[in-house]
Image (cartoon, rainbow, N blue to C red; front, side, top):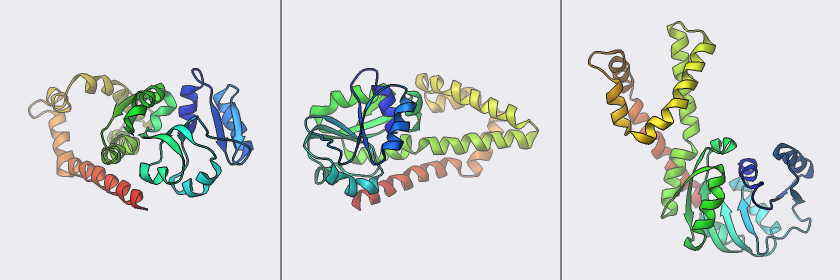
Length: 245
């Protein structure tokens, strides 16, 4: 995620990257394809008067925070389930924001939910708009729910894509052809969903006693709808648990 965000920002602002291993940082820079400032922790790097994007694993924050000297102007955290109050107690900043991008940030197509201090709202939206779409939410609780949908969503949709391709193979298609059909389906579905309600899309495809009606009934009999609802709830509850640790 750090790479995706840096790639989105590098053409418009001066980017500095700080990490544990200079060799990995050099590889990071090579992937970016442009010269950026690299620092190892403890190598004189200061967050004083800077806009900081915190993109480490949540369980590393206790070891990383003492190494971030100074007081930032804005701190943008992409740590799942990590509350602003928890970050505020460890890293100094004038303002704090939580953001949750997803894996599509690699292609500047992320759906990023954002919440936090209102005085940093516009800057946060500007930063994360470089990697896709953004949605400002009024509370951290809503961020945790959004994480369960858009943050974890690529994994859920991957399951759907894989299962549909497997179904095509079971019915008699070559694997490569079945996967191409699924890819085309996903590519064309986004604009449909942008302009029509999901229920309207379903109804426009489903004709009486047609193939879609039979397939849809099979999905319902397998509890697919309820499983997805429960998956969102489970992921949300897990985010709450992580926030308490």
